[in-house]
Length: 161
Image 1: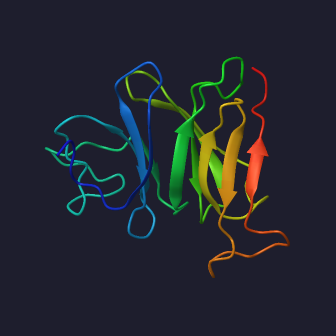
Image 2: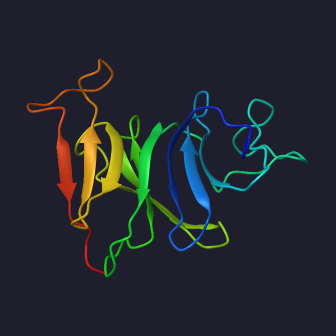
């Protein structure tokens, strides 16, 4: 067992150039998290959540008090992009891709939505071999607002840096 204290992990990827795994998970009703996983660490569930702090538990790198329902995620490895090195998270309730910048020490310095409300629920995002990002919508499962042509795979070209 590498880490404990997770509620509902959804997405994860390795921080580029490191052996550090970044993970996102759902809270029970809000308090969704992004965690920098450290061997042997306990991330608190069900003892602590959100901004609560207690000895013996590792705090999240980012917290979403209002649920965004984070899902599949990836780091952007494409060089020369404004998003290079950023952790992108598909968000179901948030209906967005969340752009999170995590530095090598595990601190978050940027945390903002992309495409908010434009495509509906985003189940996952991944980087393709062509350097583009591919995101999967999830609107026809009874929880979203289906649009003509849903569900679909979106191809997103990251902006140049």
